[in-house]
Structure formats: C-alpha cells, structure tokens
Image (cartoon, rainbow, N blue to C red; front, side):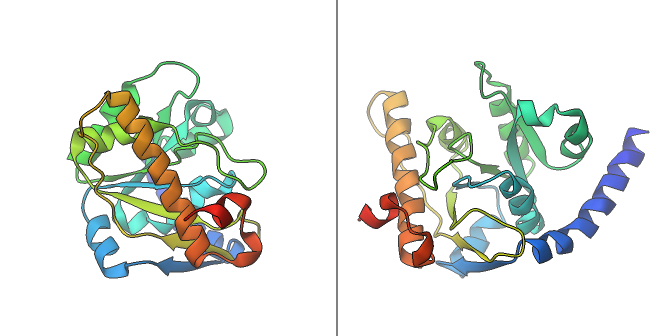
Length: 218
C-alpha cells in the first residue's frame, strides 16, 4: 500500500507545483547564476530565512530539480494531516525541543546519495520581519561533509497573489575547521550566514520590505 501512496503523492505534488507558483508568484534573482547552479547540481547545503509556513513547501518545489531534501520540525512532520505528505516526499524530521542527533545521520545519508539539504537555521518563523538568531547546528553537516553552502533570501512573507523576491546568493565555503572551540566556531559562522542573508536583502530586496536589520548591515 505504501508504494502506491508514494506514487499518488508524487503525482499530486507534480500537479501542485505549477499551482503553487501561480498562487505565490515570485521573482528569482541570482547573484551568480552560473556558479550557483553548478554547485546545486552536486551535494550542498542550502539555507534561508523563514518568513512563514508556506516557505517549506514552496522552496522544495522551487529546487525540486536539484533533488533537495528539507528539514521540517518533528511536531509538523508527525501531524496526521501532513505526515502522509512529508514521509513520501523529500522531508527529514528534526526534533527542535529535545537533544536529537538522528537528523545528522539522515542528512549525511542524503548527501552520500548525491542529494542536497535545505535548512531554515532560525528554527521558527519570525514574527516581525526581523530574523531570529541562526542556530549553528545546521553547519555541523557542512563541517562533517565539506560541501559548500548556498544562501537564499526570501525577501518578504509569502502571501497569495503577492510577488516575493527569492534572492539566491553566491555559494560559500566557510572554514568550519578553524582553530577554536568547535561550538564557538559554529556560532560565529552561523552569525555570518545570517549576515549573508541580510546583505542579499539589502542589495537585491524590495526597499519597501527593508527591516532595521537589513538597513544597518554593512
């Protein structure tokens, strides 16, 4: 029965993609399209800010050709109304409340299968437009695997029939094995990842969606 459900879900998903793009129209801006597509065709980590609940489904559909897996909170993954969808598409559950390392092994497994991983490092959606602090855990996979990371800025909260700019930045290769306490090094680079998103927003975003953070970033 499960294989049949998987086929049905994939058919529904293929039908849903053009519908999603009609409901949530976007303008895709590439900072360096050639270099980024080259990286996306190989295993990498992709991260972005998290503006609303529709981000996860939409961004998965946007990057579907690159075989990207996306992490989703375990509390959402286990909802009866959504579990059938999540478990049959490229979603990996992560427990945001408890100490959980299983997601690391699942992430490594996906990378070894020539897949990429998408993260929302804030962990939750921001409420006032300003980003939450980036949790450094997502960089553990980058450190362990050595794959490049790709920043994506979602310029404003996605709303039906309102244009949103999706700004795809230049790939990065942070030195996550530099000297220092590992947790401090990861926190430092997580902060730099957040700054990368703010810089993309400031440089390419719609001025009417600028936040105090993006205005002040250098």
